[in-house]
Image (cartoon, rainbow, N blue to C red; front, top):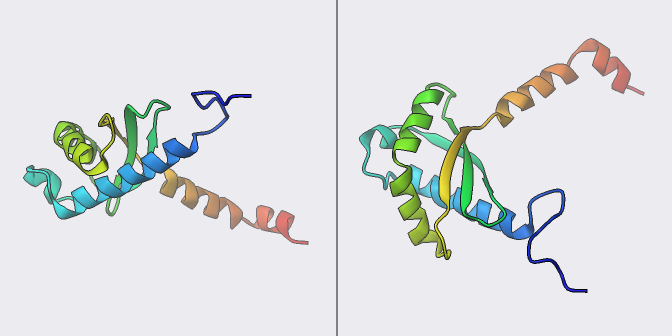
Length: 131
């Protein structure tokens, strides 16, 4: 039986994961080198934790966090202001048929890891996990 053209499983396809990682690396490199002509963006240190793409690879959502976690709202505004130039730079680097539309969200995984660590260190939970 022929395989479906579109992935309909519970998670992202291998292609989505591969392209998302390529975009993450390229975006991190562009931000680190300061290739964008915006002094506000170039003075910030931004971590790109993950990039998720839509099934058709036309939308890429980058989960970002400023180094130290301070100025999160400002980072989102500056990235949104420069998204056209970032998209153009990504299109040149990646060589995809379409340069994906970039969207930016704050990366919450570090906060979630801290909450999980805090919960696992509670006495009641530690007592339940011991043998």
